[in-house]
Image (cartoon, rainbow, N blue to C red; front, side, top):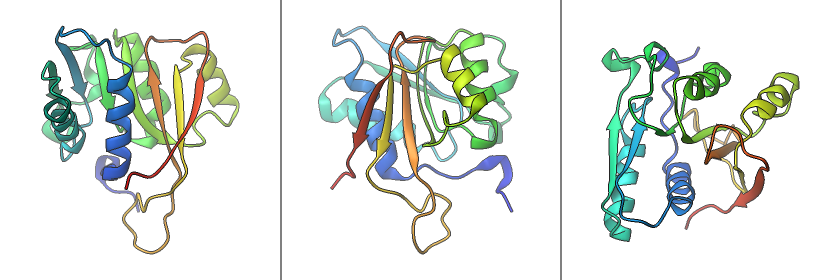
Length: 177
């Protein structure tokens, strides 16, 4: 049985890697960067972004959280309130999420997905429409669903610097120590 609103908090190891990879791709200028976390849940991604800003002394990141549990459904937004997204969307709606994000004006995005997101006909078609600039697989698995026992899910991180890249870089990330 699935949890309400597909609420499965992102493992901290994945959150840290996603924030680091996304932030490393951003311009080193001191211009403020507004990041929208539209599936904020327990706010662990927002908190990691804020921690990253403190540790790296890059205090120009502004994080704005919304969540369906607070009555703010991502799919009800007709225009993106902020141009950059970093999130872990419900996997049951991930394809719709990606399309909707770019339809409403998102410019850059980082999101967690299954490692098999692009491995089917629908995936290939969407990949051609919205090719990420970076696709990162992990050399480890996490107990993403919180069932205990051996890890059940291989996750990936997708990062877009624009709604459709010319090329997609592939990277394998190690588990943080």
